[in-house]
Image 1 (spheres, rainbow, N blue to C red):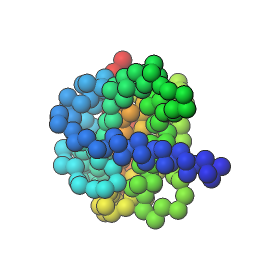
Image 2: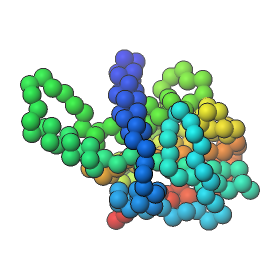
Image 3: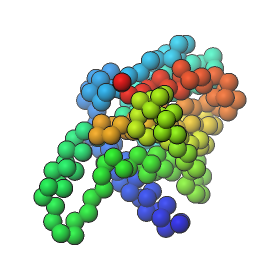
Image 4: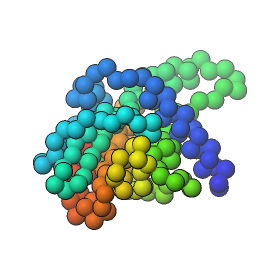
Length: 202
């Protein structure tokens, strides 16, 4: 089982690294539009510039200083990767193996958690949303979440980070990072309106 998690995590790290190699040239608004997503910016939150870090690049962030909560958003499009994968399937040679991009979201959130977790000793506990709930709340085909203590490199002075990953077949994986210096803030203020702010269009 341990070897299995290591293998999955390594796959996720490679996949995540490839996703971050290309510097986004378009606005976040254009990115979500091109990937059938929508974002309802939570009331009381204002835009804040993304910070440079080596753990996980993200494209957009909002903050509510009165509640000491910052929310970051990242989108990893699958459209071109799926096209490449399907093209490879048509011409693949004997013995060649590739992973379907649609099957990487769980490994990716695990790899991201490992990248940004402080004093990482074991894979983060990844929980999966029930299919009915993730469809209703995010219009997604799959969704996962976990909570970690982030490194200073990624989390600055925040002590807690809740990560949410949602997946739409052939379209994109989208990530939400909810950061606070107090877990009670997350429990108190993170309503469904905030939690489900980034979701796929119906």
